[in-house]
Length: 249
Image (tube, rainbow, N blue to C red; front, side):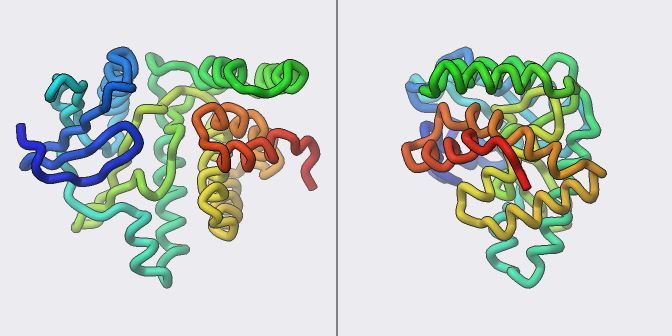
């Protein structure tokens, strides 16, 4: 295996291209369990029929856990949006359609979104009173079993040269309520400072899925609290502002 051609460097992991394969090399901060869970998520999502890079193996590279994936040649949707701003609305429509296609799938062996969020809320530095309120809210939300990505953003979509879309990075995949996944995507756009796209995205998602905007907004404090656990100081401050929002116009 060759580690000469770096595709991208992310926090705690580096992606290399080796011919028709991608080597996703994790640093020592990743546990064996987390890497194997990500590989298992990817294998399970393959079985849903969604367009995703196929997993080809898990191995060790220079003492580091490595997932071997099929290489998909193309550009990310984020890059296309930046290169063709005049087509951003068209790309955003495609983005929402892909998310809704994903939400139409079920995968009964995935971890449950509600369990993950309860665990994350318990790990926050929020007061016991706020944690109790968030756990109570989460328990009251409708229980679904739709495939949820957990990090659905334009950087995780690759469009091939012939126009075929592929969804990447299934490390956060769960089964649960699609509106929680939408709330997460809205917060990702907002975290990047792109509030205009965040609003357009939410309007499109609610229109295309026939979901009340207020329903997605009810998930915002819960999802923000869950996400705040791994965020940096700036992200935590932003996410905490959503946690404290109780009423929406």
